[in-house]
Length: 387
Image (cartoon, rainbow, N blue to C red; front, side, top):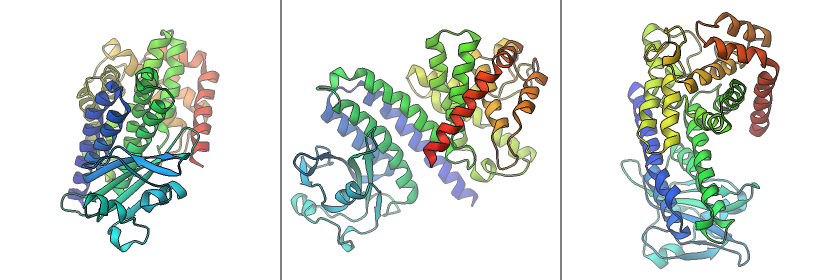
């Protein structure tokens, strides 16, 4: 069991490293064809497939087309054909162990390319209106396991979200050269997606990272930071717990108290997240590393991982710490119910000058109604999205 957990942790790290390596390439690319190649190559590497392609819908001609099938030239098929056509029609993914045993398989692709398809995975791409705009398809799992797993499906689904936003951004303009702002926006979206990778492993905190981002932004504004800096904190905050990808599930989801050894393992997530993010060359991710490594420090120097004290702690980390605790106390967890609002407020006043910077607590209390309403609205928004 422990080896299995370690393998999952290692695989999650491999996927994150791949995502970080492709982000700057995708952000810098301005040609649609090259973008699609990069997206397909990223998907292939993440799920360890022999081939991967992005099929896009052409509703005018009733077709699906791709310029990105590894090892082959452009292909066009009827929009309802094969596994990709099924995913377009139904808006659902597929996991197929042997394509030739499934009547939905369109043999014409293999006949054209002299290729033998075995295992197949498809994931639909949705545009901003929730309409299917294409399908991510991975073919023939490589390695010891010759079939795609549910974990592969989850990872390709995350990749598909990012890919759909990037493709849609490029489609909205006559040339990819004019869509710089849109592509940069997809980088911000990926920040949230990567944060979701860490949070998806913890049953009760699936939307925690988005709420912390909203609360951090509001608190930074009231603290008097320039709008650009407040926005920067909002974008980086979803990454504060990224290091949890390195924590075994048995500890991460434990409903009771940690043993001393388990607590030491849990505390390591701050350094793990910082180390992962520091591998990136992008300024926003490096700034995210600052939050990941400092949001559990305390004003009195009794926090972790470095025991920083007072203004030794980066301001962004101090702000994120307040937002993190506000959301944690106000939300139900597997080991506790949500605290009443007044009790949460009293706890911050109690910890003024101990766990939290006095001035930040003063700002929080002064604007409590507005900031706590921000928490309520964020919770309601993400609960509604989950229905």
